[in-house]
Every structure is written in C-alpha cells, then in structure tokens.
Length: 179
Image: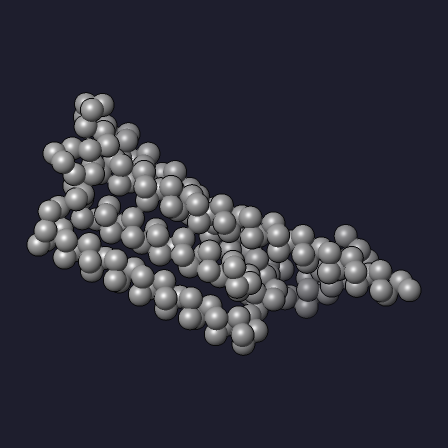
C-alpha cells in the first residue's frame, strides 16, 4: 500500500466516509449498460414466451415449466454479463465489490440449484436425464446451473483483468510522478 493510498484510507475513516467502494459509472457506461439490460430482458421475455407457447400448444419438451424458464433466465444472465464484460461496462469507474460478491452468488447458485434437485433423487439412473420423452428436471437444473457458473466465471475473469488493468494504470501514474 502506497503512502498516498494510506492517506486516502485514513481520510475516509476520519471523515466517516464509507470504506467500501461504491459504483460510479460514467454516462457512456450507464447508457451501454442500460441497453444491454434491455436486450437481456427482451431475450428472456421472448425465449420464455416461445417456451410457454411450445409447452402449452406443442410437444412438452421438459418436465418442469419452472426449470425450463430458469434455463432461459440463466441464459439471459450469461448474455448480460458477457455483453457488459465485452463492452467494458461490467465494472464502474470506481467500485467492484458488488460485482465480485454477485459473481460468488451466481457460482453458489449454479452449484446449489442442481444439488437441491439431485439430493432428493429417488429415480432410476436411466431416467436421470430424460424421462417419458422429455428433458428431466434434473438435467434442466444442471443446464441452468452450468449457465450460472459460466456467468460467474466470466465475471471472475473480467474482475481479474480489471484489477490488473487498474494496477498497471496506477504503476504508470506512480512512474510518471517519480520522473
């Protein structure tokens, strides 16, 4: 920790400023993030609507309506995370704590959703993935869990790249101040 950052830390404590970082987005980030959020919501709405139409009017492809919708929700989350990471709007100008904890929650949910369904497994192994010509609830839970874990991994990777970029920027500033 450099002397300047220690002074800033002490000033925050003395002034009763919150020590945790808050998100600060510039206007471009806010606009792009809003557009990506709207696209992700439309993706979820359209895929869920088509899913409900197929499940009601056509051949039911999954045992559970809820888990089939969870797959499309996890797909929308993965799209949202990937699109924001690609455009550089996943993290604000200042503050990454909430995204890091959100990534941990996505990863935990991705592991827990399938575990809950498999824990009360009393079915035969031959019916684990497909049952009565439909995707079983176990496979649907596993697919949703994999998509959430993938979103968490994208967030963790982006978080590490963001920290490296920030560290390089700070090192360059310190080197330029020394000269």
